[in-house]
Length: 140
Picture 1 (cartoon, one colour):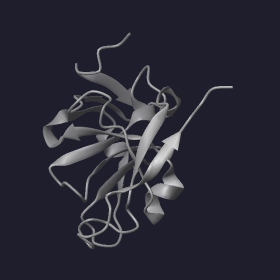
Picture 2 (cartoon, helix red, strand yellow):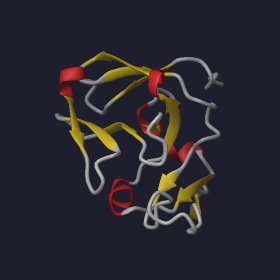
Picture 3 (cartoon, helix red, strand yellow):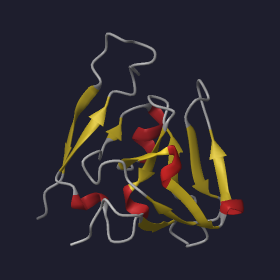
């Protein structure tokens, strides 16, 4: 069993982008979001502090996408299109890291993942619930 609190190796699908990540609190921060962008992307994200990611190869292969307020900075490999990480809108001092990019981890390793209410983002509507629901996975 991996120690998810130590620096972890990660990469995009094609391997052009490689990085290490130090998660803020292991796997306990797993989440998804239901905003228009994240709902289509479908990734499980884990939290890392801004200093918690080091690009070890392929920094020039990352491309940036922003939308709406431009606060969230979403990074992708320009070759395979895989989302690797993003600077969070809800807390710009943190990154969300694509769990599927971390060696030895799959989004299907999580039986339950909280889904953040990105359709009514807390930065836009402070009275909205921050939780939209729970995504559950069970193996057949």
